Length: 391
Image (tube, rainbow, N blue to C red):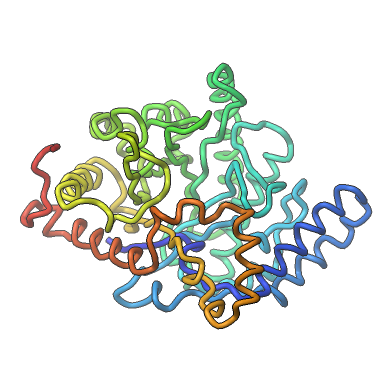
């Protein structure tokens, strides 16, 4: 097994990333008021590659560290024109990190709220976003064949959010409409790009929060029924733990052969309990007690046994650092710049759960724990992490 981390969690940002975001937000507001400004949208977005620079974090990616990233298409430099979801060619050509998988846009964006993406919305804009994101993944794989390290990389989509509790069943039908479109579009793009490497769209199970769909694997199975030849599943273990009775439900649902065979990727993070309720905060595995780590190791054994994750060969850790200095180490010597950046970050709420998230050291400690638990000998049950039943 190999290990990836979210691309958001393994980068170093220069100061102009902050400057670019302020300019981009201003441009978006201007374009809403003066539609003629959209003529310059591509040229404006291209400036991002001259202004906003990112590099991979050598303390997280490399030998004996994370092997690759799950590349988030939510990088604001990648798409421009939120109505058409046009791809920035220069951004595609600039990607140099090893990529194991991709992640599509999400329902809520703390940075670019106008680029939210809800798979329960059947508007033409959503259809263009589906095609644009699938095509971006294919083009990255074509431009960087050696950097994309999996034969058939997955792209993870959230299932989307209903308008309210009464809309859930109708939202599921809208989701299935879009999944049919997604499956058909993926077939066309695979033929268009003419390569042996095929992108695999997946739906990720949601946390027990708000009106998100597909909070259980059973619901995920319902969503992809009839499309499972083209659309598979990503299991997010931390999300599953937020559902009431989540662990027992997960282990029971894994015994469903149709569900297990369609789970092709795995996301890992901890959902700590607050007032006896698991919270969706993406905490590090290093904060789990030893007794509960033994339970987790047993769960991983069951997950690997009942799913197709080993065929993909990668597990993705979704554990951010709660310390902005891990992403912007140059701030340590620039107090005035730090004050400006912190004001911006407070508005985004990116670090509102920093008390749970630890630091980069916790990211690496979590990786070490996961490697120990998923070592072949552990999966065979020969080590002390092996499953002994729930506590």
